[in-house]
Image 1 (cartoon, rainbow, N blue to C red):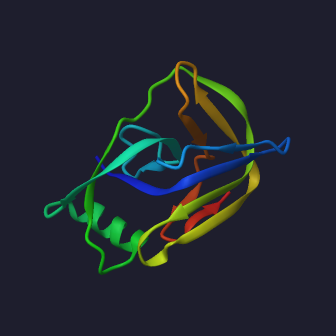
Image 2 (cartoon, helix red, strand yellow; image 1 turned 90 degrees about the vertical axis):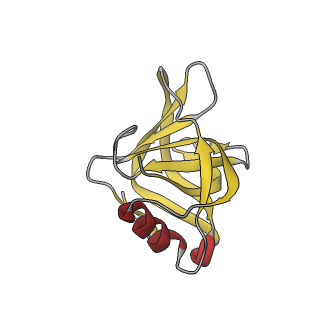
Length: 145
């Protein structure tokens, strides 16, 4: 399983102007392999970094992490529980704001070229972003939509 925390300090701006501010210790989780989530789905949920350095990982995960965070940084283990549904539609997002770490650290923002649906757990607070199936998310962050 290849999960990557693409950032935290996540805020989503909805079409009606409402801004959803997630707790600062919640991350933007992306399943690179699409095993637990669709390739173009991300969840915003609690995560925790563990101080252990990761020595052995599949090459695809190492490559994705180094490309996203930049070289020279040690990779550490993290713990995240992927939230389950049922999910309830709460609106369409037109903008996402988040903080990245590593060599490319900083505050990032991305206007969605087309609004994307946002869902919230019926029995929880986690959110799911459902991008179109032809989304582009890479080392630069969100590219399309």
